[in-house]
Length: 127
Length: 227
Image 1 (cartoon, rainbow over the protein chains, first blue to last red):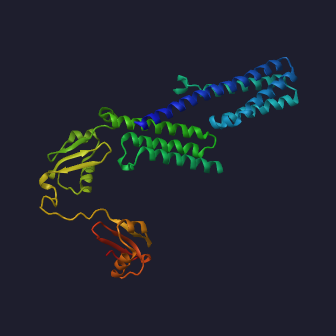
Image 2 (cartoon, each protein chain N blue to C red):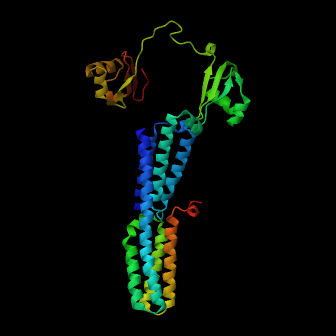
Image 3 (cartoon, rainbow over the protein chains, first blue to last red):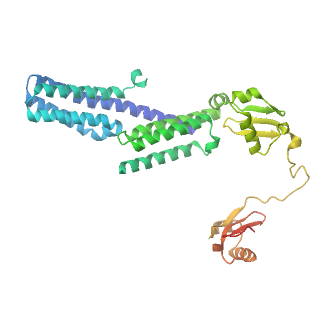
């Protein structure tokens, strides 16, 4: 009977950890997308200074969680996000095409939303 | 390369621990649920082992969940007969009173050739000599011959043979197992005497030597014959 409770407890712990993971990932992606969304608005107004600060903040926020993200998510998804960040930062250094940089920010937001969506225990994901 | 190596070791150890926790059944004795578990675990482990792009947790978590669920199911099936029947099925009688039950064979998708092969494996060639043949839930066939067809036991013949007990290994591949020698109450002098009686001078010349509770010795010299 002890084995039954240990096994049941193990499953409960994994369910709890999965819930914590979804919440933590939600916080990371929300913070990052918030900054990126603001950066996109700044880029529409061609405010390169403000956009630069926001994109760097978003990038550092994402990179700080690099280890956690690599242990829980598919590496290809994380690499795609990182590549998009590098692209956005390249546009920032050049300061030539604000609309292209804004488009990269929008793409990043979309990529982050998809990552979070893929981890949610929804019927769509289950099926 | 290092990543693949470490991942392989981690997954392999996890599977060994898991299978060990499940019990000591052999592959041939797996119940349907256990066979399914073994197949899925093998597949689950191989993917993160080879693909570094998949987090190790993606392999570990499903394996842990499967092992936990399997443990729960095995405990529940041990507690409840109905649950056990649902999970593992029921044994099927395929031969009764010497008569092969065609319906049961069809139900279990067992051909007559396979049945005969199983019977021959167990030393039976004649259906008429079999009272019951039961296909167990783990796929093995249990054969119960008629009482008149069973070999007589010593008790039935009125004999009282001595019980030799379990033989203990004293020398294994030239290595003397002192602890076993002492546990049987013998000394090195006794062993040397036994070896000398067989034309051997030291344990290094012996491949295997066992002794039972009655003092019966089985000795195989290295590259030689049993005595």
